[in-house]
Length: 595
Image (tube, helix red, strand yellow):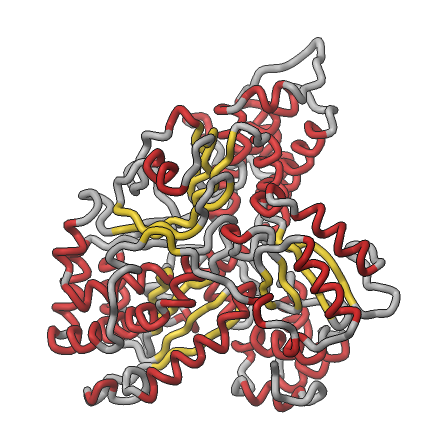
């Protein structure tokens, strides 16, 4: 728990160097110590940081974990991922509310507890789960809910709760060269120093390592571009904002393989000439903060971080951990950098890209947790062995986060090129009917496509692998995802802000039995608008769950349609008219006619 006085705003600001770029961290500290961020606190922070109040307010209002009104001594947020719902989250939430005599989203009459939902918290393999004052509690059932209710009624401080409530196993079901083989801290750095920076970059290039966050950009190309970019400083940023529903492999890497991740960051720093690194840890992984800080301290004591690393003159590099505050969009690299700079996490216009103009407008490498772990293995062993595994376009292995209707949810490390069917066999999913690969923004495949392969040339993935049996309603799965995207849209661009809300509302209309074929065609119109006009990847992919389930599971939609005499077919003119209505723009639309 925080060790500073709840009213010591100057102390909190000083802890973060009186730097407005650390505003998100300052607000987190205020929230943790005070339980809220009241209006007068924003005024005081503006004076202490010497910035306009509107800047403080813009950041404080952007992130879902910040709030101006009290949520009591215990804030309980149930994970509302579709997997949590399948595991009985709604019933358990209602059961807790009954035990505590309160209504969801309302502070209890005694001012003690507040219960609400939040987005996926990275525990789909241990669903249903929840956050209590930011700390995750997995594998909920009525007995655990009873214990939580008793502890709250007794007003026990969270630090005195039974540790077993917060224990989160890794659930590694199948390990490979990344997670299944021993690693000695410092071995990759020693190999990189002996080899030299250019030769180490050449090994990363020879490995054909591609980013493990989903986009699959070649790692060596990004590092090389940053290395040659001019700037006053270079930075290394590890993207641990693992917000894609159904993904939890980065949580496991950070929990049990943090040395591998931090060493990969240090290898990158040696290659590009960086002295400062950041681990941007999603706020839902607050449980890991102290443990990770301990790993960093141990590495500093061992000469693996800090000045003259491993005795190499001039090799100075250290890592700082920044916590997110509940914003899925910060998984996008430029939005993450905006958040690191203390601003709302809204994606930047690109180009320029972070490798030439990133953190504080300096050259910056942003890579995923798994990517840095792979880079450490490559630096230690060379690139040839890594490239030999997988496929020509997708080298190495991939960590897959398996959840849903299977006997053995958890982490599976598989070589790229493995079939979906093989993963289903491994995890014990005998009745699988559909799989959502790479989360809501990825691809939904039906039972007819289980021979497709996990690879950038077929099914690219950030890691999520959500299994749905024949008993599941794929319309409700897609509806849950539309609510997620509408909630997580940053609001920066009109097509996404309006389009995701329209998708959500239309799916709700269909769910209520008031929709028609016209509404389904309107959702296709919205899809064209989002793909053609949205500012970033969130908007581009927000319609994927609806369009893909509509195509592959049409019965799930048809049974909800209200039959009308007139059911117009989809036409592009309607899409363009809707787009002009939303955006007010008549230009730059010709390319949609070619879709």
